[in-house]
Amino acid sequence: MWLWLLALLGLWLLRRWHRERQTVPGLEEKFVLITGCDSGFGNLLARQLDARGLRVLAGCLTESGAARLRSAASSRLQTVVLDVTSSSSIAAAAAWVQERVGQRGRRGPGGE
Image (cartoon, rainbow, N blue to C red; front, side, top):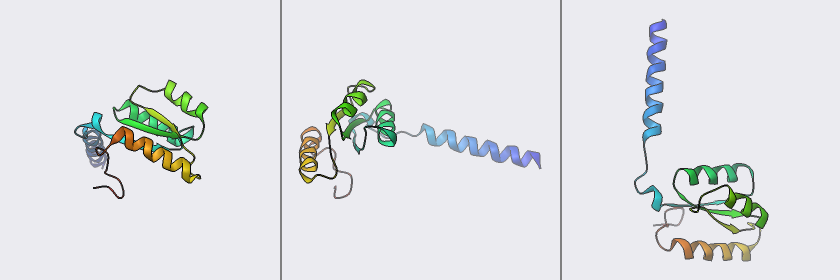
């Protein structure tokens, strides 16, 4: 019985190790846009993806939140003040993203 449990645990650990070693080719060329990066989950995700080498475009509601995030990250992370409840703010942020990414980043919904 114990031998089966050890074998299952070993297989689970091997599978986990294999999954964590997988990488995305050209990761340093990829962009990701995250909204809600002032604090909480968005902030944590932006910092973690930045640490893994992705170029992060982070939307923050306030300039102070954007400044705090920039100070905690590398130069790959760029911030924009974005209020997702304002159409004009969304349009300005979309133009800002297009300026930085160009056609290299069209992979999300509506992308190529």
